[in-house]
Image (tube, rainbow, N blue to C red):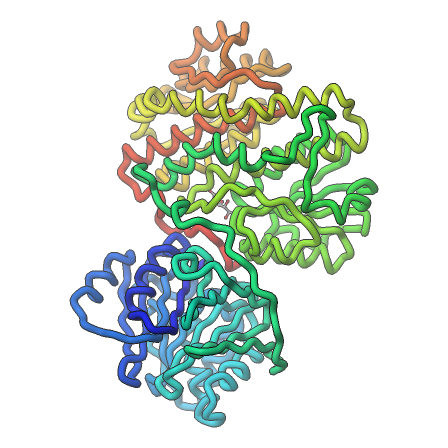
Length: 613
Ligand code: AGP
């Protein structure tokens, strides 16, 4: 969850670290800190609160160093305060570490170290690891070896950096289950949890794998396994432009990302649709075409918004390809001993490609012999590398913690996948051609919805103080109701629930009174009339209806009579509707949060990339 950055080279490390921390702040933001080695002495500065708090302290200091690292924290062990903030030191005060992950056997280790007379200042698992490395260093007098031996006894996950004034020209890094990337610059190296912290300096990177270490000095780096075997790895190139990391005049990254969706859908589909045959070309799947053709079942897995995409994908694949699909929360799938066979295809959906539960779900599926695919945004991420094949979203970096453009790209890719499989099975050329031509129109239609932002903002203002919201949808719009509610919860801290509209009368109807805004996805489809009955049920209890409707639908008359507000989306076919119907809900959540004055891009308690289980 946390963001880490390390630097060794000729620049002032403090500038690089603070800039890098800003880039990775979206990974965690309850405290931050840095360690540098200045004149062979370790200096550590850390502060609870957002990165700006650390800035205030550092801007009044006069430190200079060519080596150091920084950390921005999302608390797992111990509340967010100055003491629990990273970096953490060993008992000599000469070894410092930053860590992303969880040390599961920290209680046993701590006990052992306490019995040996070591002491602890914080409540964190990371300090236990720092003290443990220090205790081994006392015997080995070798920082790399002390780190290696300590990590060999660790149960849990780590993306870790270690520096020490004992060996002041070196950064030792290691990973298991948490990301770590090595950036190779001109006489400088950057180690980070995230390529966004590296791209300012270089695009040349190496991705260490689990249970690998990297030992970096100013002129060189060595890669080795935790079993002490030196290895070589091929360099990769970061596929990211600096300008993609800017807000481009928008007040928040989230709003910018909502407005990018016309473009990101175009990027997701570019070169992948063949218009004269209605076929789909997904280069990343070429090697597994045969397995896909023989697939008996598809399991879609992910967390949060990506899990909602999976729900949409289930409907799309079953309808176009006729292959049975199951959707699993990655966190449940990995622990419940799922019954899998070699004919099953397990597809992980993830924006970051680093979500710990999703990564582990994929590993479990691999152990059971399934073919694994990734639908991932971040190129070179752990899930992208762990799966047998996959399709990238090409949505560009998503910085706002609330996922928006990644969601619409995920469901667009799932639609392409459904059509790809469908054209192998039972979808006619005519139907294929009709669908790709409709997909082609999406960017234009998305922009029509975005133009309604000012009127959606007016609706948001009216309901910004409501303590509860209900979101209702049926069919393809049921997952959209869940996603709309999640968006509102995470950025505005308002309680919201999404439901399949017909389920309401089995319980949630009891919640409805004149104070309950009910967002109803009432787009044109073959169950529109059924949905209207659900609207009547809400109205009979005096609920306030905010409807999302299809322009030109003859049935809209009912909505005009019953709904307090109607937001229109352009007409498209049923299967494509969710890519459009989520957009007004993203805007509604954004403007309600804006009205409530919350931290939209970095909502409390959350982090962009959940690398702990
Ligand atoms: C989305 O708004 C959330 N912040 C969250 O649910 C997210 O979708 C989830 O953590 C999964 O992340 P991933 O797509 O990077 O795997």
